[in-house]
Amino acid sequence: MSTIVKHLEELSEIGKLRRADFAHLVPISVVDEIHEALSDEKSDRLSPVFHSLGGRHSFETIRLVRLMRSK
Image: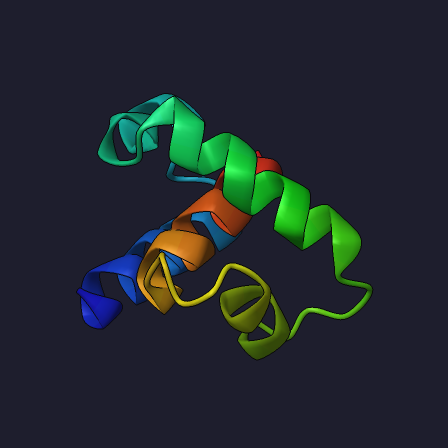
């Protein structure tokens, strides 16, 4: 899963990925919860977000939501 998310991030960086290409992978309720946690975090580090969510969502899911924010 981590490798797939990394490839999605790389595709996004070169402009070959749209949010619509992967948004269906994460339920909207999860997106909203993670988006709020990401907004509370001032750095790009994922560990504080992961821990603030109580470990309910994987690092890969958090990375996907972070990628959605950049689109």
